[in-house]
Image 1 (cartoon, one colour):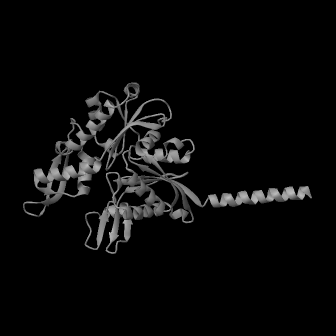
Image 2: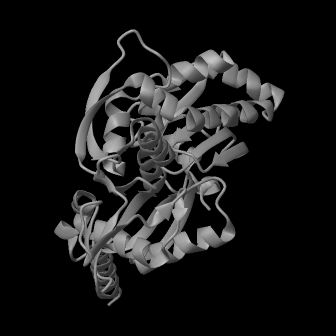
Image 3: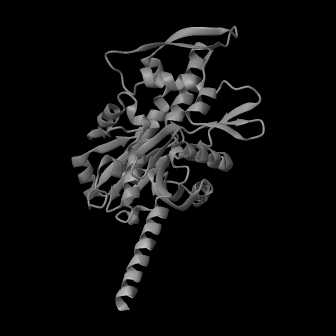
Amino acid sequence: METKTAKSSTSATSKKRKKNGFFSTLKTDLAIDLGTANTLIYLKDKGVVLNEPSIAALNIKGDVIAVGHEAQLMHEKTHKNIRTVRPLKGGVIADFEIAEMMMRGMIKKVMTKRWYSTIKRMFVTVPNGITAVERMAVRDSAENAGAKEVFMIEETIAAAVGIGLDVKEPYGNMIVDIGGGTTEIAIISLSGIVYSKSIRIGGERMNEEIVSYIRRKYNLLIGERTAEKIKHEIGSAVPFDDEKEMDIKGRYLVSGVPKTLTVTSKDIRDAIHEPVNSCLEAITKSLENTPPELSADILDRGIMLTGGGALLRGMDKLIADSISLPVHIAEEPLTTVVRGTGIILENHQDFRSVLI
């Protein structure tokens, strides 16, 4: 009788395990780097599965008809029945409703092969200087997009983990993440941020300055997409021997007709001088507020540069020459933050102290 009971109990436990195992496959954990310029998604056991512009296209009724790359193609080319919106400004959510719909659309893209899955945990990156209200907006958007549990991680901590630094050790690490809407600077030690500074200046501000400069100097009106392309192709933070040129097209303000003209690397350097200098001043200010022992660590280890701004030609050289410290650009700086968030997701028990 006892043997039968034991067998019955073992069988029931086995069935329960199988049942739990089956239902666990229906739940997915994902990490999301919700940036002003781009949104990146990391899926558990899959890695980075999405990297698309943070933009949504809406019809006249307010329904989202496209997100990401598809919406970007429509940007600045729409008619009165369609509008494109960037729901994040300065690294935080500016339009709660559209941000939620955009997140849903992007998550749907990566979950098409897992239509049966639900999101168990979502790990979302946030700027260092985020307010309680802004944090609540991020949490609500993530929950409304389908997450059962939401954990937030400061971008610089995620970047440090993505670079491969051991943030739990008692050593000072300085991270500078130049994103689309913000520049995040942090001194990290013992799984925490000793000092941080966040300024609402990044790649988008540089694009605005390029548009303004070309309009002011050449009377040519260009769009945001053209400014972004110019910055990528010929933009630089310092002069180089091989200065570049580029033909651009826009609307000539004097006659109102389309026109082509040539701009140089020096033009773009002059255009973005102010936002680049603001980033440099913020880095200098952060070093001035760093405890002496951690300053010694930074002298040995240098500054780690991540984010899209790290790809601006000569940015590392400008910082290194200005403050006389070694500056290292992270491998694949555009995905450093989401990869770090993914590592935290995969090992969240070991990183409990860095979760918000």
